[in-house]
Length: 558
Image (cartoon, rainbow, N blue to C red):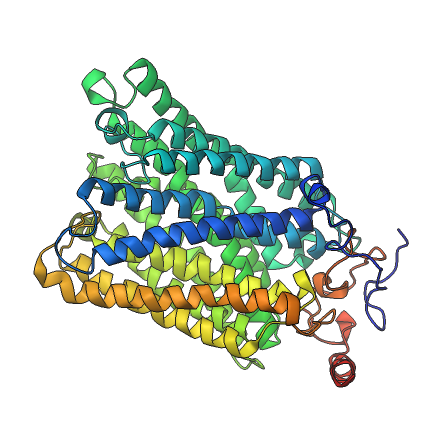
C-alpha cells in the first residue's frame, strides 16, 4: 500500500471492486475473512433473533391485555417471557452493536485494512450461529420456564424444561463474545494508522475498547456458572441446590457478577454511537472529549463492583447492602458525565434533525429516565417495595430498549449509506423514529405506575384495577411494533431503488467517510495518515464543506 494523506480532492481513489461485489457466491461469503462481510452476516442473524424475540414480546402484551390468564396457560406464559429474555439478551442485545457496527467500523475508523485476527473473527460468527441454533432447537422442543436469569433452585430442582440445552448454548455463545472482545483489543492496540493516537480515536472506538475489556474479563464467569449448573443437574453435587447442601445465593452472586457488567456490554457501545451522532449532527467537537473517553473506561471498571444491588432482598447482609447501594450511586457518575457533555455539545450547535439525530436525541431522553429510575432501585428502602414489580421491567427496558436498541437503530441509519452505498427515505425514517419513541413511552411508562402500585412481574393474571394501564401498555407495544418493522421495509427498498449515497453524504471528517461507499475489501485505496484531531470540522481536518456541498449538488443534478 502506498502511504499518503487520507484527505485528497475528490476523496479516495475508487476501486472497481468493493466488499459487496468482490465474490458473490455463498461460499465466498461463508469463508470470508473480510470484517465487513462478517458484520453483514451478523446483521442478518441478529435481526432474525430480534424479530423472534419481538414476537414473544407481542404475545406477552396480548396476554396482559385482560386480567385473566385466558390466552396462555401459566406454564406456557412462564416459557414465553423466559424465551423472550433469552433471545433478546444473549442473542440480540449483547452482540448487536459490537458484532455488527463494531465489526464493520472499527478497522475503518482507525485506518486498518481488517481486524488483527480475521480468522478468529469468522470463528466467532460460527460459534454464535452454533449457540443460536442450539438455543432455538431447545425452545422449539419445549422451551425453558425458569426466567432468563435461571435462578436456582428453579433451574436445578423444579424445572423439567430444556435448561441444560439452553445453558450449554449460552456457555458456547460466551466464547464468541470473548473472541470478539479480544480481537477488538488487539486491533485497537496494534493496527492504528500513522497519526491515529489514542486521543484522536473516535469515541465509538473508545466505547468498544472499554466493552471489550468487560467481555474478556466478565464472560468467563457466566460460562463457569452455567457449567456448574449443568454439573449439579447431572451429578446432583450440592453447589446451588439447598436440598443437597448447595447455596442458591452463590448462584446469584456469580450470575450478577457477570450480568450487571453485561448491562454495560449492551449500553456502552450504544453510548459510543450516540457520541458520533451528537457531534456529527450538531457540527461540533464533543465537549470534554477526554472526559467522555475515560468515562467509558470508568463505567467498565465500576460495572464489576455493583452486582450486589440485585441481592438486596436475597439474604445479603445489611452492611454489604449499604456498600453496594453506595457503589450503585457512584456508577451513575460516569453516565452523567456523558449526558452532560452531549448536552453541552448540542449547545449552540448547528443541529440538523436527520433520522439518525432523532434517534440520538431520543436516546438521551429515554436513557435519562432509565438511569434516574435505576437510582430508585439502588436505594435499599425503596427497592424492598419495588423489587420483582413492573417498575423493574420498565427501568430495564428504558435502559436496554430506550438505550441500546435506540442507539443501534440510530447507528444503522447513520452508517447505512457507508455500508451499502445507498440512501434511504428520510421521510419514512423520521416517521419510523417518531413512532418508535411514542410507542416505546406508551408501552413502558405505564409500567412504572403499575410497579409502584405493586403489580408483580412474571404473572399471567392480575387484579382488575391494573387493567387500564395494561391496555395502554399493549396499545403502545402495537405502535412500537409498527415503528420497528418500518425500517426493514424502507431500508430494504433502498438497496434496490435508493439513490447513490456518495462517499460522504453527511459531510463529516472521520476516516470512515474518507473511503468509498461501500468500502473496498482493504478499506482504503491508499493508507491514510491522520493529521487532524478527533471531530475536527475546520480546515485543519482537510474537509472543505462548501466544496463538498457543491460537488454533491452537481452529482445530484446529473
